[in-house]
Image (cartoon, rainbow, N blue to C red; front, side, top):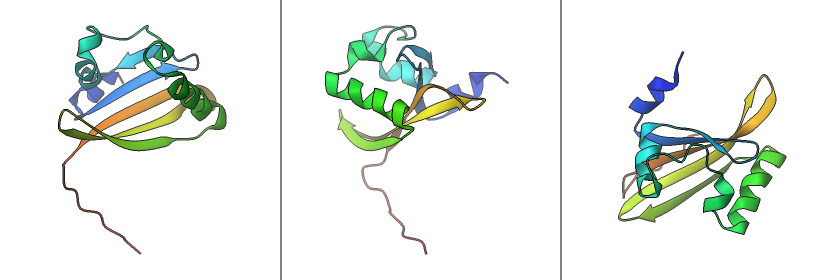
Length: 111
């Protein structure tokens, strides 16, 4: 199985290793960050984040925690979800999902 299926999803996927080096970006993620070059694969997240954000990224991996938040930029609202990823129970790095959201979105509480 290849990662080609991720290119047909309507969300950005960026993957880094445990040092923060970007190892994979699907086509949507590449488009999101196109102003920084054709692809950021091989670059380190530390180079494009504040010290506080970098500390958060490293803490997510060290503490096996996920982080979710919403942003709005250029009129586009997004949910960002960052979570550690593993292979054979070994921490491999962090994956970030960038999901565009409608401006108004229903919220359901289910029991």
